[in-house]
Image 1 (tube, helix red, strand yellow):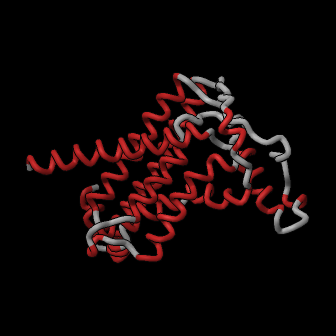
Image 2 (image 1 turned 45 degrees about the vertical axis):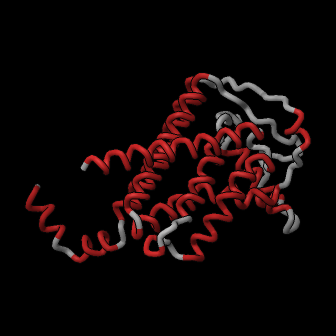
Image 3 (image 1 turned 60 degrees about the vertical axis):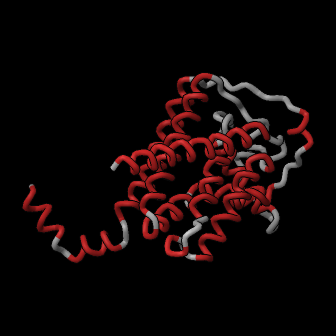
Length: 236
């Protein structure tokens, strides 16, 4: 087995995978799979969600166009993590660990006290492609698909969507030129990260307090993991 592994390391395929940081991309994808697994477990542990009837949420309008930024949550953090792995491996591992910690804490909270979102009744979760009669209705369809994928609207507080939005921004920013990722990608990450967090309240997937909690939790987890990494590094 060892000889087989060594022979594989001598191949062009391995060289290509190594050059393309496939291992780092694989870890980022596995993080999402683990996140989904934790989400499923917490939902089964506590399937009953509380509705938070807050006046400020009733004043926030439903703006379906923000759904575009909501969808970036599903792929952009993975791309940004992969891009950062080429420039700053320490930051990659800090962010990867921070996201994992954020998701773990969030799902612990979901298992203890679950919150259910309040959605607009005029969006039909069963809307089909054939129901789209105009360009504007594309956004209705995209929102409907989210409601269909997440029919219960559970696991709101804190918002992992908002947390991942903050991590997009963190991954996109660097104070050292040699560790900066591509400018265009960084700009996309910053804009989409901020709007991804904001989109959670505009498409009524989260309450404002969920979003704020997600932002605060992500920052605290990032600071904690950074502190641990730096402290560990100073001892070596």
